[in-house]
Length: 423
Image 1 (cartoon, rainbow, N blue to C red):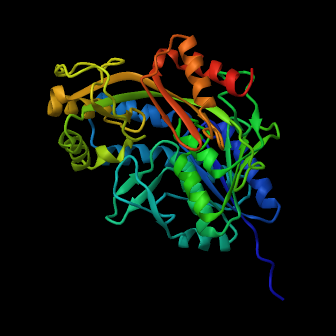
Image 2: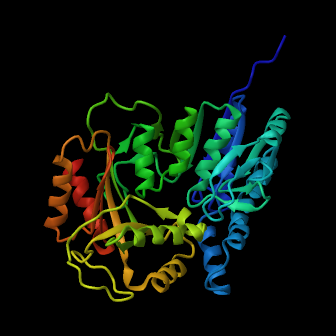
Image 3: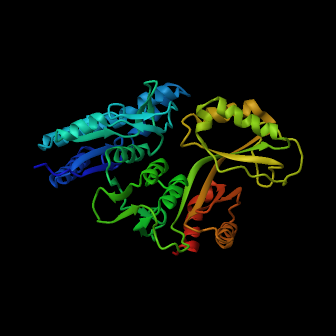
């Protein structure tokens, strides 16, 4: 008589969930209960609390622009601390557990430091330890390239680790635990009336993540969609609420599911009087390899406003002064060496490139949000009514995004949420 096949559960715990020894103990208790239900458990952990930010500040005290390879070596240490402590906590409770780094777990990535993408998962050691009855704790956010270099997956990369492992292990769902009960129509700290969403489609969640929502990583959702894995987001600290991300959320009706924002953007406007200037800019970013991989690219906007007056080197772009230009956006959060990148661009392109920093993006997300221009008009009207100048507007079948100065972001989120979703 053969033994029944045990269900494999993959759980991911964010930095706030493992922020101190007491919280690590509570997470260990939750994992022990799950294993007590007869399930095989794989756990992915983030670094404790603000460890990653602390390590980044430490690196900045050593040198202004540390290499991305060495940053990966440094930052990957945060998750290793979490995994070892959680494994100790489980073993102390009589639950056999073992911890693995990303490379030990078989997380294979490309060779882009600071923002690598997972290309393959070889979870042989994970499977061996599960077969021995152990809980396997995996350091999120990291992997190893085929050149055997340690890499990190960018902000929120532990989500991607968890979903990729769930796919490789044949799990039906991946549970993501954080300090909130699922996904809300806006950040509840900013919009107290924001409501929790019971269900979202992959496309809606990916757009929310790409537009700045911190609950899930966009690449994780991309992985889940490709493999058909349901993602369940819950609070580590109780409450009972959750959001499920899976195919075909809703009944096909047009809806706005959320309003979110992103800070720390730089708007670049390259002269487009000839296509050669634009091609040169992109080639320069791509030649730097790590630069181009970090672009938050929403397409190019060409316009005639502003005339043909020559630009001065280093001049900040202003509203209505783009002239004939093509624009793109850099994200400070995605670029550890953002300031060095911008300085390099100023030196290389001078008057052919205008850069405006201190920019933010506000986005409204939902299936069918742009079947007509009605929602675009409503967003424009709200922003104009509060005196927030729209520097750039872009749309997709699931998103309306407007670039404005950062100082307007919080109020813009509150007002657009009230307009499109309700107070």
